[in-house]
Length: 576
Image 1 (cartoon, rainbow, N blue to C red):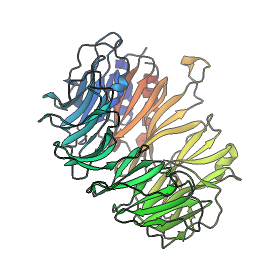
Image 2: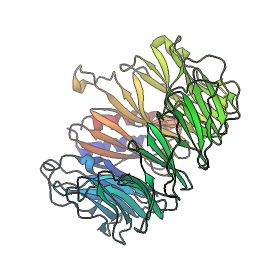
Image 3: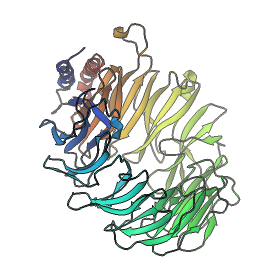
Image 4: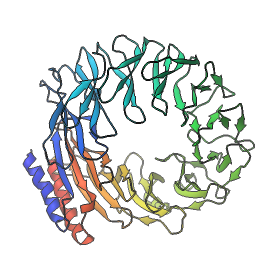
């Protein structure tokens, strides 16, 4: 087994190979047993906060924090009570919610197996932790969310009952929690209104609006038995909800709940227009409607067109909605008076769902992106079309990949800097030796697509994140055909993390060649040019958190040495 010292030396090798840079590219931040869903970065990018999971039979559950630059070692900011892994076996119980000011974090800590979760407000600098929930009695959190300014938290829990109650509390720990609704079988859900001073939630099957300090509540009306989701308009005036049947409510008036669909089969959560004046929803699996919330106006958007093409086959862009119907795409204003068609040829067989949805906005308010599939040719292509109608422009060309593939698909699909689209072409045999390479292309199709990566067959991209400024994409690559002498003739998955600068197309390995590990959970650290990712080792169940400084990536002259050194890092982690 390779020691941690050798792992550090391997990381050092990568940094040395890139010595033309002012700083190291990739460094090891910590290597510990961590709760995978209990790792957060403060909004200002200064600290990392994480739950540490002790080995079997030992005390575990402390919450720690440390500077992201590694200048100080981790410090305990919330101590767990004395219990062992043999008693509590699910690290997934641990949750964290960072506050906007980066100074405090909310932590749901399972204080012991008999007494369930307790909610704490914890200072990131270790200066103190305050409980902001009742002492739990076999309780669990069902949901929690912050007020718009982060000053209060709304949560539901079953601290005192088999049912859930609704609570709110100041997030800085300066005051006691407030019980808004006692536990009841028909109580739950809830969210803050935009002003942060009131919440809307379900209380004994009543939709209720109540001040966060527990003042006089306003009963909006009885909920239907199948009510599920709750969507509030940006101004906090209206809410829509339901499952199967769709309803709306005026949150300023009692007894204002009314049904707004026609056929009792509203199959998706409605989309609220940007100005909050209307909701758009498909009804009866056939037609698309817009409902003006301030009056009884219900508009059929797809009249004379046909059925909507599957779930999430529509997108709101400004005061228009773009949607797929049959094998064509259309846009319509919310008044239902200006139908435009922006595909006539070629005839698409269907539309592929991607990371952006079946149809997506290009971000300029004028262009629609979509992926059309041609069943006869076994290929998919990326297109852009003007929202107000006109012919679609083909942005990709997957035909060359059909020579070694049963079909082609598009994915991932992301918007990046300079009004470009970053997309992957996925080819090969599905669920076997699939491969992915990345391309960029201007949204307006003014130039041909440009290939960024040239991975061989069997190398597939499994996770991709784009930096906040759209300059970088960081992604994991899996080699399904990798074979290593350490494991004889047994095929092993090999994983690596790579970064590509969209403008230059320079691809840099941040780690590579690792087996028996899972690599992922890529997170950009604000706009600092740094990115963090985790390497989970299945042998000893530890997680190595790595931080890469993308601004330190060397010029192409030093890149070959960095590529070789990255394989050393991969071998180090592989053999741990």
